Amino acid sequence: MKKTALYDQHVALGAKMVPFAGFEMPVQYSGVTDEHFAVREKVGIFDVSHMGQFFVEGPHAKDLLQFITSNDVSTLENGKAQYSCLPNGKGGIVDDLIVYKINDEKYFIVVNASNIDKDWNQFTKYNEKFGATLTNASDEMSLIALQGPKAAETLQKLTDTELSAIPYYHFTVGTVNGIQDVIISNTGYTGSGGFELYFKNEDALKIWNALTEAGEEFGLIPCGLAARDTLRLEKGFCLYGNDIDDSTSPLEAGLGWITKLDKGEFVDAEFLKKQKEEGVSRKLVGFEMLERAVPRHDYTVVDADGNTIGKVTSGTMSPMRNVGIGLAYVAKPHFKIGSEIFIQIRNKNIPAKVVKLPFV
Image 1 (cartoon, rainbow, N blue to C red):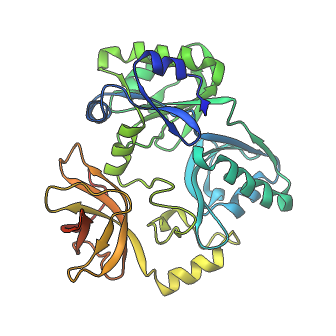
Image 2 (image 1 turned 90 degrees about the horizontal axis):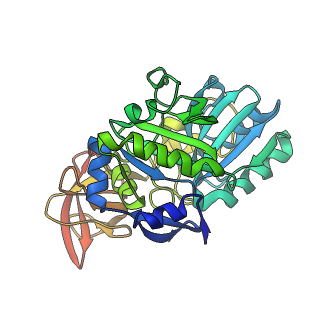
């Protein structure tokens, strides 16, 4: 198991450590609910250094990214980020990722920890045609996510960068707590606002401790992967390996908004154009339970007659709503908003309804 640069700090703080994507990661500290509400109402700090980071450089960097990702890289300006995915050439998704444009010949890519090797292979395979310069910086970089309504006030204490001047899904390179060349990104996976900071491993403890101290007056607490999961699910954000994978298309997953079919040639373009014309036979939907019950990954979804119509991909008890919520792929026509579906829980068919995302 790999360890992030902050591993000893997590242990010292009493975090419960678990194996995740090849790393020993903190799943929780004070408790999932406590951490969840801290991010929704105040500010929380996450170590997400297990994520992967690539640099794509050179005169053909944009051409490579335009071909292997689903979104339109040509719309990016310097200092802007873009959510996208890597089609796998067979109608599925290799991974979802964020593309950061530093300049015309330099891009920074953030990928999921469990897919670093798979993604790197995808990049290098197609790069034989384009000849960009690729660097896998995953082992050298750390990532701290500062999330919640008090995140900007906390971080502003430590940087001269005017954070209010960085719009959502934009970034800059600045100094944090005296440490230079930190990528300061107005992004996150919680839906509560905040910033993600990318920097060298050797600066991790210094930045973590400074942020913790700066956020103390706002009620900042460290948060683990469990709260990160309940937070992202309340916002309907996909989790790779649960809601999207090599067997799901971006259109089935509701990611048509990051799939630009008119941008020119790219991996799976023809397949996705055809799928859009014909319509999908199943779709990822949000649902909430109509009775007190908690849906879980892989639970079967049935219709009123007990016929299998799909499968739950993510589920939890929403801390904010105090109701069972989840994401599921369901067959046509059951994916319409308001449709009644049933989740099989311990041999019982519990009623639920399809709802518009986000849940919160």
